[in-house]
Image (cartoon, rainbow, N blue to C red; front, side):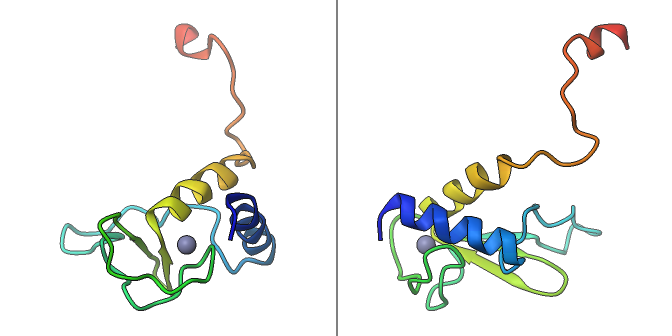
Length: 101
Ligand SMILES: [Zn+2]
């Protein structure tokens, strides 16, 4: 699968809600983890759907309250790019706003 194909799968997943568009919320306690690195081996990647194999390049698992999303390291990077394309409400960039205080 090419990078563009993976991006298309991610965009489709974002559209349909299969792939979340936000990171998991901050953990309520230190014991709770919301991101696991080098986890998810043997489970399908949410982006490219290939099973995550043991590999030197780390895989990423995002742990939400109701589900876990597994990504290859490279697919996670593509997800970050693709979800960044849509600006969350209220996050409009105002140049100079910080200077006004
Ligand atoms: Zn993948």
